[in-house]
Length: 373
Image (cartoon, rainbow, N blue to C red):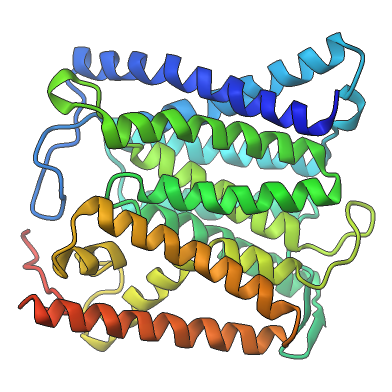
């Protein structure tokens, strides 16, 4: 059995799990009256269940276990799937994030409480020896010591976790961007022969397919539409943050040296990360609290241009794919520092194009909400 077949099995097993679990979750939400109620900040008009993310972690793990079991039953492939101490710490950290997301979806938690748990969960990884230890010559920096790399690792994981959480504002967006990022990491981990994590990625990608089906095509009147909630967005964000660190770390015992590790990891999450940076800077410029919720994220602005949700989704996903193609091509000819500068310029130009469209539609470029909204 080849590795490609093993990954395909994990992907398909996870799809099946998703189509089994999500209807059960929908029925549970209806029975317990657990809905995401519309308000001034939310785009949906109906009460929608928001526990779809609960299906992510079980589907991923079941798919991985079943795939390994099939491979072992045939006497092939099972010895290629290995994990380390990092895996144990990662799994425990992931359970913390997943549990906090579920609690928040069910009873609600303060942003401060979730932030503290994110820091604790992310801090466990450097304790296991997994941290950003090399910038691969970016800005002239190569190896970095543990005392710098450890807090940098925590910052990166928490930042990416919240970036995915905050961009989860329209149907399919967080899941779609995560699929693109996970697909990139799947290729990279397969290239390095890191089969265990590649298998987990394939399993996570699989469950996003049924979620997208119910999220985008489900009929709310028939109780077939669902949101991922924080249990989903925080889980996706934490896993993507972990993969950024895992793939970026220079460890000759795990993978060969590639000077594009850091660049590719950054590229796979560039859109949600750049959007959070832009929104934060914008709030500072307008003297607004940096953690205050508003409607100035990328998808909000594109909606003010007059686009519908599906159009916004397509354009943002194309933008993410465009950055990946651009950076892969540029890496062959210019330094990473110049690539990042080009990315920033491209992002700014894209924002200016959006702002022009918003003004033509007679809408405010920066929308300030009343505090009681």
